[in-house]
Length: 265
Image (tube, rainbow, N blue to C red):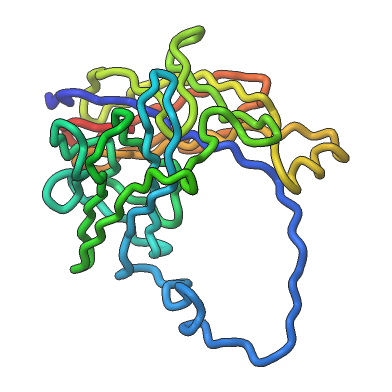
């Protein structure tokens, strides 16, 4: 019997809202797709790169600074696994630890607020996410200028706050890109591991979506998505996505691991 040495469980959570879209019309000869920005990547299933993205910074409740990163996998089918190490590391963090919770598994498309790197106020080191794939090297630095301040925790001008998540009813709250981590827990290879999460939201939205909600009376639910974040092999979820009422509720999924090792979900 194989036993997973540990299974660290954290949660990627996003709140979506219905946006009203308007059609845009223009006259003239349209550009070829390959001449548009990133146009060469549209519709390509595999062979394109995954690039890191720096999204901004905010102040944690303890006074430290959180640097928020995401990524963009340009393929529409190919996913990447780039183990944390020489080809996937964080540089410039006090203490020199290259594993700062960055993903080693990269799903297709654009993913926002995937992880944060916490640094002390006044740190003079430049923090860089170094990522190598498809024969290319990307080094994306953080920027602490005021132009990159984000409202990930305190909410936006409309008072819209991020959803709150817990791994125990009434337990510690996680919110924003930093989230919350629980574990480690143990599981057997091939045997489902049951994971629960409790979610609440303020039910507020911003921009055009807020105008739509005001007229329709609808309160958008929280979209909850489970993903493998780090780990040596495939992970299967009985429920990979679900919706929870903004007023709050509990969600469950069963996770099955194909190989022993350390995982972060």
